[in-house]
Structures are given as C-alpha cells and as structure tokens.
Length: 80
Image (cartoon, rainbow, N blue to C red; front, side):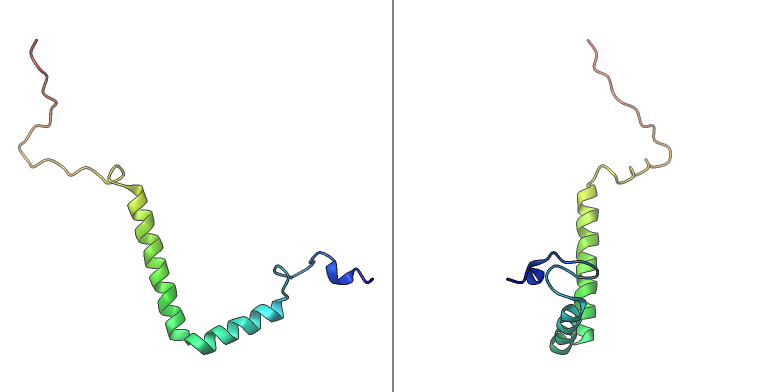
C-alpha cells in the first residue's frame, strides 16, 4: 500500500486542499456573487465588527460630559 496519499500536508497547502483548489473556489464565488456584491458584503461585515467593538467598550470608556459653566461639581455628604 502506498502511504504518500496519507502523508501530512507540507509547504503551501491549506488543510487538505492545494492553493489551486482554493483559487478555483475563489473564481467560482466571484462569478456567482460578483465583485461588487462581495465588496458590499465585506463593507457590511466591517461595519458590524466596528459596531460590536464599540458596544463591548460600554459606557465606562466614554468621557464624562463637562459641567455647565458656573457650576461646582461636589459630592454631598449626609449629616449625622
């Protein structure tokens, strides 16, 4: 039995497929969806990731709004 078919991938192999397989898949995807639609999808994904990152930061990272001029910002203490 020939063991070369079961040898681990070496070089520029991605998983079990060669670079030529991935290039053919890329060409087929571009033919099916078109470059404009793929660009729009990439842009939408980028906006979604940015929105998610901004949402994860939360309210704590936002700078505090400055008080109106002429007001004093102090903490009130309760009398005992």
